[in-house]
Length: 462
Ligand SMILES: Cc1cc2nc3c(=O)[nH]c(=O)nc-3n(C[C@H](O)[C@H](O)[C@H](O)COP(=O)(O)OP(=O)(O)OC[C@H]3O[C@@H](n4cnc5c(N)ncnc54)[C@H](O)[C@@H]3O)c2cc1C
Image (cartoon, rainbow, N blue to C red; front, side, top):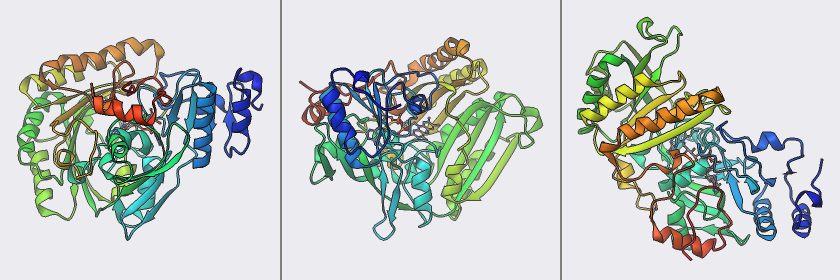
């Protein structure tokens, strides 16, 4: 079924304009495919946009933006659709869907990649791996580059090289007035700074130009510990971070283990602490550090493999499948105090779902230093990031799982530092850097009518 003027009352002329020359599909609620495309990663969100504009080009994005303005409707942007708060889609808004725009091209000499705004991390990894290069980004290949990069972007390489947002060199943007600009730090210094960690909402990024880094073989080692040993392991981790090389990233997760052969028999089906360390496979000092940490407390099982960055990035592709119910609460910690460790272990024991986890990671390194490019990312000095990822299947369990995630973070409140990582916050919290008047001014300059708003927003200053 095609679009009819009656479907969007009051916007017939704007709709005619949009129809003429739009290359991708335009979907209204009655159209085939509408329900599929409005569905995002988090099955908790069931929102019905007024129109979905499936863009196939920058010109399509500009046309969709002009339509939303003319129709007086807010616009949301869908990148990979992975934001836990579901900010890519809203009721009665125009959804500017970039998921058909995933082409990534690489200039290996210049060490740059151009990635279209709907690219997933695996699209970037696939294109860059062929040249022994990578852009530091998140750890799950099906995550969208757009939201991740605009909000910061932590991953295996970020302690060594910096956040994903720090690697944005240039951006092809569609502004709220429908104009297209190639923004650089020279041409649009304020906008570029806002795009780096300011949580989006300033413009649609039709394509990112990203700086790439050389990446060789990596060592992935992990160890599994029973809950009774978890406090000792986290205390060893705490001491270790004081001398941890920036080449190493350590990631701890409390989660219920499966029943497969690779899991030590004593831990099958039980809650445990999984500590993973990634570092360069050809750096003896890093390898020695990694062994030192994992051997500090004898583990129930070890895993070790040397792999390419591409293989490492693909390791978690089966995790966190789309359509389940998810809720996350997150916080930064200045230290892993004994009280924090106690609360983490308690919360893991109370975990109501075998699909949920509590993640703990040490940050700092190049995340603190940045790459010298101006950014709006506000959490440079944070030491630890801790996140309660609740995941479950049954809607009747919503309350119990949301309460567990919230309760886990509430129990850590005595040790939390200010702010939360915007890419992990739930819909009832502000993801934008708190009270940042400068960001509000940039928003006012580029989107005074607040076209790009959805459910979470940097509000224009005036
Ligand atoms: C399974 C999973 C693993 C994750 N792992 C990590 C991780 O390792 N590290 C980490 O830092 N984060 C991680 N995240 C969090 C992730 O950074 C956020 O969920 C992020 O919002 C995902 O971006 P997206 O494009 O998929 O999301 P979407 O929901 O599509 O978009 C999120 C917001 O970004 C904006 N946006 C997206 N693309 C564009 C664009 N091209 N132009 C303008 N605005 C845009 C939209 O307005 C939207 O409001 C993970 C999330 C999931 C679900």
